[in-house]
Image (cartoon, rainbow, N blue to C red; front, top):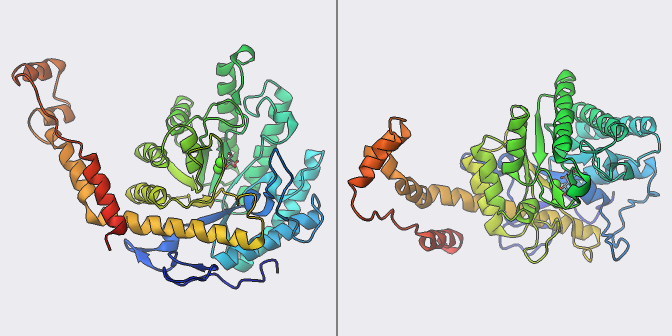
Length: 438
Ligand code: XLS
Ligand code: CA
Ligand code: CA
């Protein structure tokens, strides 16, 4: 046992001062007809929770993630599985997400890496059967190995491209083996630093070719879930091709990949792109592409990917508002792609972080449901566009209007038309009333 200081973390309510209890996440509480745990399929990110030790460019790690085994060994890989499953069980987290190289130490030879992956996933499968814990999505890490310095799908080297293909092939096989509901393409180093040395068109076409091969192979081996693109505007490259949801959706449509792919939206990536988290979710949802969520938050004072545990309840509320409005996410969940701050370096801190994140999303769910039940925001928006329900507006929507008919109408309207107030401040006060009015 690695987390012997806790039993199963329980819901104790908002007044509880127990640091190892949920204050708001009550798995079986029904909200809008569904228990919280069905609204919120939480997932543990293997890489952060079991791997991130606080190392940064100024200093070594501060947290011990050895789990009692020597690092870079298969014993360590297994200890991570044991610790991960104990952690998920105790927190009531029902899913995990992984990169290939999160699971085992990468060998020099890809055949040996794959053998290790087979061994560890056999071990993981047993744990999954014992606990009922499931895989949300898998992915391939095509950005850490130096061979990917010029990209994976966007590399200049056909040989490196083969390595990328080999990793995707294996990661897809593992995702199918573990019953994963999704397969993620995060852009990694698919981007560029300088146009002086880059053929953008060539690189983007090659990325699309790789994705097409992935879809073909995935479907061939029985992958029925969703492929996801996870947009991010920068970091590690200066320009990442999957800048934001709108860009990624345009790319998928251009290359005929839109039937198989959806978006995996990460909060911190949205803010790096100069958008709100809610904006990225809305753009995905209105295009039928809200696939899954990487649940974290960034820091508005910092221009990089801080991957903090979500704590801002306004943000989680607006996220849940979008998810509820979209009718949930078929193959998606809420993956805590988040890490403890460097000085929060104990096992207790790992537990606090998940309690914080799960409570923040539970509160977001409760408040978003109230906003929807309250109905004032919906009513306002309906009324705002109501001029399109009749008269000249209706002719625009039903397609009978022409530029001439509209122009003629304008000529008869006189000097000025008032479109009506946007009432932003009023609506913001409604949100605060829902938050604090009881
Ligand atoms: C990095 C990404 C990455 C993806 C999975 O910024 O968030 O962790 O989620 O490759
Ligand atoms: Ca992510
Ligand atoms: Ca991130």
